[in-house]
Amino acid sequence: MWLVEARTVFSRARVRALLAVLLAVPVFLAVAVYLAGGPRAGEGPTFLDRASHNGVFTALAGLVVTMPFFIPLSISVVAGDAVAGEANLGTLRYLLIRPAGRARLLAAKGVVTALFCLAAAVDVVLAGLVAGVILFPHGPVVTLSGTTVPFLDGVGRALLASLVVGVSMFGLAAIGLFVSTLTDVPIAAMAVTIGLVIMSAILDGVSQVAFLHPWLFTNYWTAFTDLARDPMRWHLIWKDFLLQLGYVVVFGAGAWARMLTRDVLA
Amino acid sequence: MAPDLAIETHGLAKLFAGRPAVDGVDLAVPAGSTYGFLGPNGSGKTTTIRMLLGLLTPSAGTWSILGRTMPEAAMSTLPHVGALVEGPAFYPWMSGRDNLERFDAMGPGRSPATRPARIADALARVGLTAAAGKKYKAYSLGMRQRLGLASALLVPRRLLVLDEPTNGMDPQGTREIRHLVRELAADGATVFLSSHLLSEIQQVCSHVGVMHRGRLLAQQTLPELLSSTGPRLRAEVDDPGRAAQVMAGLGMTDVSVSGTQVAGSLGEVLPEECCRRLVGAGVAVRMLVPEHASLEDAFVALTGEGFDVAG
Image 1 (cartoon, rainbow over the protein chains, first blue to last red):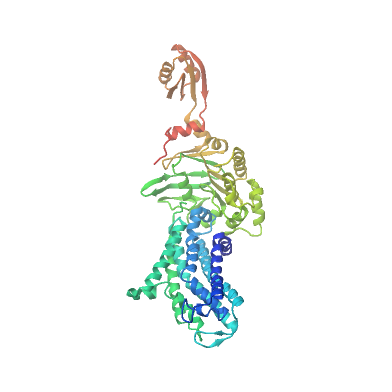
Image 2 (cartoon, rainbow over the protein chains, first blue to last red):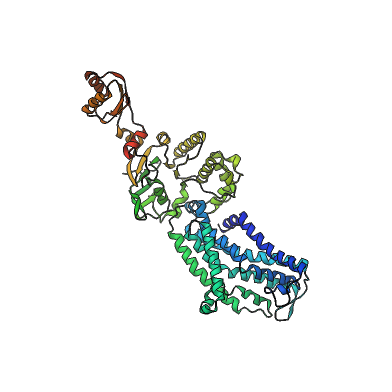
């Protein structure tokens, strides 16, 4: 059932377009830096000043640039559509009559949305790696701590970073899925979800509500940059994972409760 | 002993915002019957069907499908139920065949090994084989309806719940559906058919239930329902006013005048007796026709003439 669901979601032109846009960002970034030169050391988005030093940093810079908006946007679209989209098409009633089982259907939606989170982040990193390797040197990688690791080690870290980013989107995916169970209008679910991302990001920047920061699902989104240190620092990443798990449990339970009791009128 | 019931409800009710959409419905659909579920728009037919299939939670009442208590038995009962509820719904960006494949795979108990053959069979049965590879968004309304039926026919079913199955279909398609319903019934399936097309129902159904304003007004075999309204007599005369008086005087009911025609329900009155009295009263009779009530007459007698949708 998960495989069928995954095939349906990923066969959709909309989903493919989202992945294509995510693919284009690091490529665009790499070409821009190649043609115009990167920012001076310490300026511009994290890693962009190093993008021309090594293909691995092109990929990481791609992740930094897409992280605040493009990746969450695409996840909001997919998660917001998950249940509301089926309700809107009317296919939800036929899935329930099939019977797919309400809880099992929601689980399949959750798994595939999580899969999309990982796919989105991996997509960015792979595109960045390919573009970076073609345009820039691909020798040993100088870490943020100043040490040097072999190129393949660097590639491994970039891929690891993409998985970390993917997992750190799980909380958002759970929120989107929950919102999606509340309405029959997919665009509303998408808008609310992306609105919550923006709100969380704004609150994260307001020092007066610093007490809230550790609880915001966007708070540790940049923790993956610690993977570019030597040795890799996992402290914030674990904290992030724990926080995401909390969001998944809370909003997953909300979605589950709503899904089981929902009157399907569409 | 009561015969086995494919659908049985007791006091089934649904409130929307405090107003009853369905109000204490007791359905008894005998196994093996072809049951016509009638009612004007907004009478609660579709809401009832949604509750039967577990899409809506009833506000009150109990129900069972194929002898098993719902909604507890939904996962074991629904695989035996094929349904078309309020029009077909599929994924526009996928072909007809891919759509069927998805629905077939999104639940338990369907062998992937037999899937291609079953899908091909179902498509052939509704005449969609040639359009199977086309995207659903390119389908016409009638083709969409056919695909919905195909989805209900992917496996042999014990119960089919078909809500307006001929909606949007050409006369050819309507005939085919009638044929299909008879075929399914002949194979022993119970068919629960909701439709506005009374002539359709009259042609294929053995049992009829009539909904009105959320209540089940009548539930009988088709012959019983037709005879309950009784035969009518229609006369064309020179003096309709006088004729109407005579008919009413004989004890006929529902007497109405339209132009030079007078009609009424005979009840116990014999047509020849009525004729003698009319002539005796000096009314010139040009034509006198005893008529059997059609399903439409019975339906209107139960639900009234009003055209307005129940609020």
